[in-house]
Image: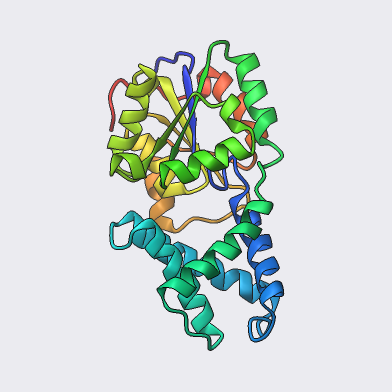
Length: 257
C-alpha cells in the first residue's frame, strides 16, 4: 500500500463545522415561546424533536425535487402548526417560518473545534486546500458560511442546489475534486452522516471520515459498508489533524471503488 499527503480537505457544513442542530433547537424554542399558546403544550424536548423530524422529512423532499426550497419551509411550518391545532395557508406558513428563521439565525455559530481544526491542518499539511460539499441551496449555505466568518477559511463551496446532484452521488465528490484540480485519492471528506458523507466519499475514491460526535452506533448494513469502503471514524474535529497528517493511516486508492 502506498501513501501520499492529502492535498485538499473537504467538509460537510451542517453539524460538521456549523452547529446547525443547536441553532435549530434554540431557534424553535425561542419561536414558540414568543408565539405562546397553544404552542407551549409540548415540552421543550418534544418540541425540538418534532421540529427536527419535520426538517428531515421535508428537506429530503426538497433534495429529491418534490418541493422547492420555499415549499419545504412552508410544509415544515404547516405541519408543526397543525400538530398544535393551528391551520396555516401558504402565505401564513411563509410568515411563520420567516419569523422562526430570525430566531434560528440569532443562534448561528461554528462548533468550538472547527477553527482550531482548520488551523492545525494548515500548520501540519502546508498548502492544504479547504472546501465544502453541502446538500443544500448555494445562496443559503453561503450566507451561513459568511455570517460565521468561515468564508475567510474556505476556498470553495460545492452545493447540491447549484449542481442538481446530491450526496452520496459520487459525481458531487468528483466535481469538488475537479474544482480543486486534484484526484479523489488526494482528497479527504469529513461529514457527520455515515452513509451520505463518509461512505459516499470513500466510494468516490476520497478518504472518507465520519465525524460521530454523539457516539452513534450505526445500523449493521451501514457499518459493513463503511468497513468495506475504508471509512475512518473520529469523535471530534480535534482528532482530524492526527489522522490526515499521518500518511500511514490513509488508505490510498488509485481509482474510485
